Amino acid sequence: MATYPKSPKEMTKDMMYFPRMLDKIRLYQRGELHEDYHKNFGAPRTADSACCNFLRVHHRDLCERVKQGGTDEEILEWCFEKGRRLNEGDIMVWNGFASKLGWRDFATPTLEGAKRKHGIADRADIVTIPDLIDFDEGRKR
Picture: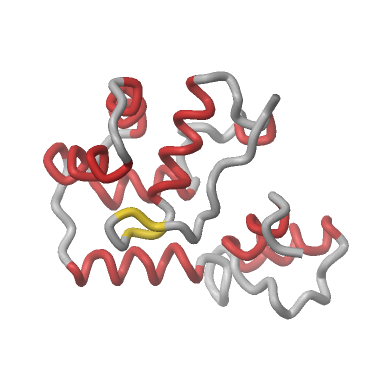
C-alpha cells in the first residue's frame, strides 16, 4: 500500500522538513511511497533538492546513506559532516523558507493553482505549500 510521508512541518534537531525528506526516501526504498511522488523523487527544483542544496549534499548520496540505516538525527549529522554544518542562523533561514514557501513568493502561483484544482481557493487557512501538503495528505481538513 502506498503511503504519504511525514508532514513538512516536522523537525529534526530544529530543522523543518528534513524528516519528511528522509521519510520519502525510506518509503521509496521500500516501494511504499505514494505514486504521486515518484515523478519528482530526487528531481531538481523541488523542496527535497532545495534542502539537499542547503545542506550541500547530493540527493543520490543521501539516499545511499539512508539505506545504511540510522535515526534522522544521525543522518542529519552525516549531512553536516559530508556537506556543511548549519548554525542557528542557518536553521532560522531554512525554517523561514520551508515554513513560508508559497506565501508571497515565487511559489505563490503554484499554490494558488493547486488550491483551485482542489476546489479550496477560498480557504484562508491554507497560505503556504506546507499547509497545502498537509491538506492534500489528509492532515488538515
